[in-house]
Length: 321
Image 1 (tube, rainbow, N blue to C red):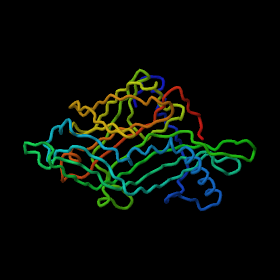
Image 2: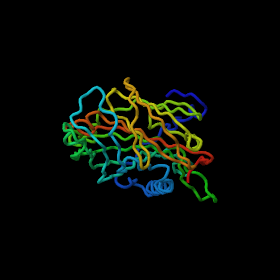
Image 3: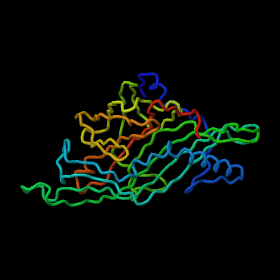
Image 4: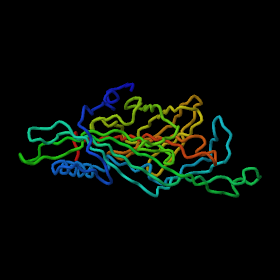
């Protein structure tokens, strides 16, 4: 990561040191074989549920449509002419991996590192011009449904802190990562190893009057107080880099999908304005392969990075809730 300002240098500070072996996983919660371990996991899960707005963004489960009426494919011929697209999620399976460490004098851990995953299944739907050669544009529209499978992943670090009394111990969220959402092929996956798609985001640059930083790993942890902060309705430039110059890059916000400008050199740029309301929000960048949108035979192939940001003058506590 390349840092360019005070908050940029601290943005994705790695926090997770050595941790103990994980405690297994299941749906919805993994459980330890010991009563004390089960209690710790239940308390950690409760603390995460109390901060759901910070941990679970919901952006990639939304059916918000994206328009394709402007700008065609780059470097490849279009086999279909898409007008707009949307995601339809039919099934979400959640898993939680727990790793506890830093045991105190009572034998209880004081740190918990949790990997949250959502396996999402549904369809990626494309409305396209069924008769592009005729003289009457868009007089006949058809819809293509491509199978969709995504793995959503985020890391969360929690600390056990002293409560109001000597016997009162509370788990609180201390740090979170961004989110990475990557498409995979269940038919080609085996033995717990997923066959991910080829589309990759390599880095994301965030430029505004409040700072300038480059993110290269969306799953690096950062302290809650170091969530990027912006003024209300501040203008921001996002520049994403992928493996090819033929991808389609989309800005992902609640209720809206907007296409990036293709710079022709594997980079893509969009101008974005932060929310006018203070508090914690999420914004994402979704890279779609050219074939996902312009080839009726190509599979759905996608990767998204999502990150939280804070709109001033709100402050975020060091520990939540």
